[in-house]
Image 1: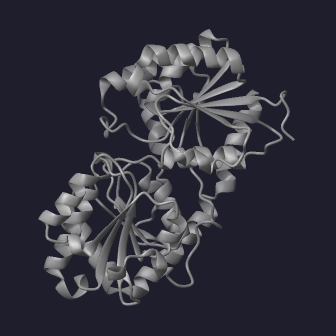
Image 2: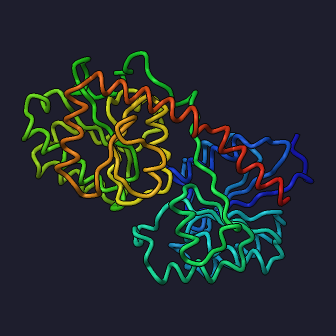
Length: 378
């Protein structure tokens, strides 16, 4: 039972839209025992209809709209919210979350957590000295860091954060919600993708530069050109929205493949749409621990992804997926061709992917990890 005396966790995030980190936050507040904690969510910028996925009616979402108002009014509002709400813990996420730390401390918050969920778009290799300095400068305001991957943990150590101050908690996936299909739910697909003979190559993610969906388009064109027989039964589905969606559609037209690609836009049926895929591809230039990779693996899909960041902690080469270097279009085409030509291998790797998630990346394990941290500091 929730009471006014239950400790309040104030979560600070850049925005609450469809995305991996945002989905992880919603899963966390939905699944943590309601009798243990209250929650509030502050968006440095804006919120969206995605907030409707929050089940608990007592959780308020505050959107501070930094892009319209500037940072100083946002900092003032953060100070006011911390004064009014009196959270036991402020939990900030990623770069923009750092802006909440000083207002929280000035408002009297005694415990601040900061978690890193992936590389910054403008710092894919983690060598941007300004961003390193920003994190070091905020270090004294942070009681504990959380990272979603060993790669990000090492990044913090490299910039001077003591290892004993860092806890690593893997993202987790709901393996009941994301599970293999007995048969493809074809009602979700446009007519040109219908048919049991079709092989669907799919990806899910925000359409932005770091996700590099352009590479997937070019690799798919290469598949059609080099292996026309294989290519004729393979189609491409790109799920997501974002600032580069228009550019991506124009690229498909210029490559002459737009009639074989479905740009679905944002969907709220991701568990079902993944069941229509045969192969999952994530061509990102950088990643923390990708929720979409975990969701695809839980669905029983083999994963082709770049060998960057936390991807190498999820996928085992040759067991449940394959790796390629970012931007290596020819290699990506070859890997897609291998799975397209060998359905037995596709199914074998898909089954192994599901088993890996069940063993190492369950949602219950993630929730337990955060609960231990919160309980120890409330």
